Structures are given as C-alpha cells and as structure tokens.
Length: 513
Image (cartoon, rainbow, N blue to C red):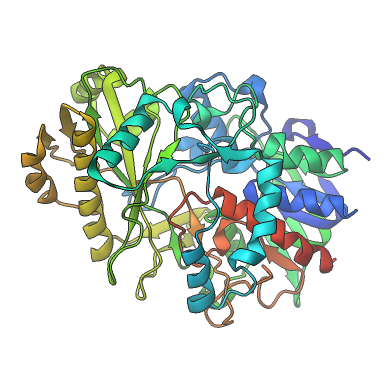
C-alpha cells in the first residue's frame, strides 16, 4: 500500500484524519520512528510545519536555502540574540541541511545518563543493534582522509603537529559528489537525509504526510491525548492561511526537535511539572578567522570530514569542547563573523584563503549546570534563553586559544578574532592578548547547530519529563522521540544518537497502540 505526501497548497478545506499513530515532526527522530511503525503494519499520519522539497529545489543558493529550509527563515536565535540558532525546517528537518557528520553516542555519555539521570536500557551493548541498523540504511561510513578538502586538512595537519588527537569523521552519504553545499540541501540526493530514506520508506509503506502543517496544540482529556490540532501554512509567508487540521490517533508522538517540542507541549498545557523546556543544551560554538597564503576554497568539499576530541574530557569542574570545521560559503561566513560594511566586504574578498575551525562546548555535564530554558512568547511562539556561566566563558577562552594554536601550526599567516573589538595576531606571541579578550554573551559571535534537551529522559519522575521508554509522564499515549529527550549534550554531533534512539523507540510506541 502506498501513502502520500500532501503539500499545504493542495489543502483547501479543513481536514479530519484518524490513525494509529500521529507523528509531529519529520526530522531525525520522527522519520526513523515512523518508518518502523509502518513496517509493523500501523497506520501513521505525520505532520510537518516545513515544506516538502526535493533535489530539484536545491539550487545551491544560500539566499534561497535559508528562508526555505531553516527555522525562522534562518534568523532564529536566543532571546537576547547572543546565540544564533541554525535549525532545519522542512520535510526531513535538520537532516536536510546538516553537514552529514555521524557519531555513535560516546560510551561515557551513555554511562553518565544512566548513573546521574537514571536512564535505563541505553548502554553500549543495548544501543549497538540500533546504531548498526541506521548505519546500514543511511550508508554511514568513514570519509576517506584522501578526500578531505583543504579546510579540513588544516584541522588535521595542525592537530597532528601539536600532538593532538584528530580523526576522519563518518558521514551519511551515498554517491556524494563532494560539493560542500550540504547546508543548503543536496542537489544529487547524495546526502542520505530523511526525505530520501526513512520518510520515503514510510510513505511507500502507506504513511500520509501533511507538509506545511503547523501543529498548534495537543488536546488532552484525562491521561490521554485525544486530538492533535494544526493549521495549514502559506509557505511563502510562513503564516496560517485558513484550513485547519485535526488528527485523532491512538498514540501521539512529539518529534519536533529540542526547541519546538517543548514549545508545543507548553502551548498544550503540558509542562511536565515545570520541567518542560528546562535543561536545554546547545553545544555553543565559537570560532575565529584564519588567513592562509595559499587558497583553501573551504566552500567546496565535504564540510566536516575531520574532528578532534583532544579537549572533550575536561578536568573536574571544567567544561570540555571539541573541534570541527565549517564550510565558508559567503552568507554563512558573514553571519558567523557578525561584521558589517567595509570590514565585511574586505573579509569576504579573502574568502578563498579563509580556514574555519569551530570549537563546540560540551554543556550539561557539570553537577550545577542547568543550560537554557524554552518558554513561550505572548503569541505562543518559542522563546529560548541561555545563560553564559563562568564555566562556559572559561571554555570559550580556552577554545579560542586552542583554535589559534592549531591554525598557526597549520601555517596560517594571520588570525582575526571576532570580538566586538577584533584582535589580529600573526604568531604565538599574540595568544596572551587573545586570552585576555572578553568572553561571553554579545562579546563575540556564538552559534549553535545542535539543540538538545528540554524534555529530559530519566528514571526520577521528579527530575525528568519522559521515562526511559520515551513516554511523557502522566499521559498514557504521548511519547517524545527527538533530541529534546537528551539529559545533557553529547560532545559529538547529535544526528546519529537521535537516529539510534528513535530506532529503539519503535518497539515502545508500537506496544502502546
């Protein structure tokens, strides 16, 4: 039996649908889950606020891609604008625009979740078959060092010269042409994103997917969700255009991601005893610009093919970080640099010579760390607040110096910090001045491409929103299957963790139907 994808422009009247399972969100969690439920013979309806796009729509133009494929048209950020938030919004979610980097959840993180947060059934041995299954379906494999672009080579070479750990990453690609434009949608379907894999599987098996459908609330009666309410959006403006959608399902799954799922629950009066939206973690990212004599052309080639976890395991009381690269397409670079006018023009003129290494802070592992908080604005939209703690600012300082040392070791001729009053250095004598610069909110650009937490999983009902089987506490037929269930951040890119957890969650959700 074949299902269908219905786009918003095709809906002219209110819709009432019934099904076994309604999945809200089509990203890494919802897609993997839905495909498994369809395999089990269940009738699944999926609702996605973003549009449905295919390779024909991906023209490699940033000016088209960010409004089309990102939350808030590419302008999402924390309430004080101190952190820019890169998060996908389309059928496939962030998998449509991520940079394909895949890691299994580190063993130390799984152990931390079990020991500190009481999460059961997620040790390495228990998760292995789930990771193996998604790795096979998504063609996750190591990207050869020989195919690394010069941007990633600088990370590799600089780390090796300093005696730091560095290794090739694994990527979910098949037939990749190494274009480097993963962040704006793959025009050859080389990236094994959800819309070309698990969603395609689910639709082929009978699932109905409504794109351009923003879920506004979940209707609760007693200890059950009795209806899912949504509204059809006008894709060009992102605003409601009239038709309403109501889905009645035996089981409802929230898979909207670590910011949108908490917002949906809060709009529905489901605050998890005050815990929904709390403990939101971001892997806050910092960088600086490195200028090389020879051309880097970091806008071409696999965006992230090398990583270093030399500093991931921190001393007690300190926060670790890890190093990766970012592509240097013009709009992305301009946004990250937070420059304007002549300075921006001069910087972009040097784009072929710029190398970009990122440092991602590993938040959520310290005993007193609470992370960020998702609440609602007066109009019901998501609001994200994230405090810069002393531990985080200290990590950002250490990370800036580490990035500078790495670039200098790799042969960079000049480095520019991106502080409000930038610092230029050309050798190691400038590292002390770099460390002395101010660090924290609005002192320099910070962004996040990894959002985790907000509906924390755990064993203690007083400290967690969902149990170890993804069930929302106090509602029998509501599950949360996405990155929001992570009790902490990961110290690696989160996509494969979400894939694996969603694969594991299939059995729990199916058993509740």
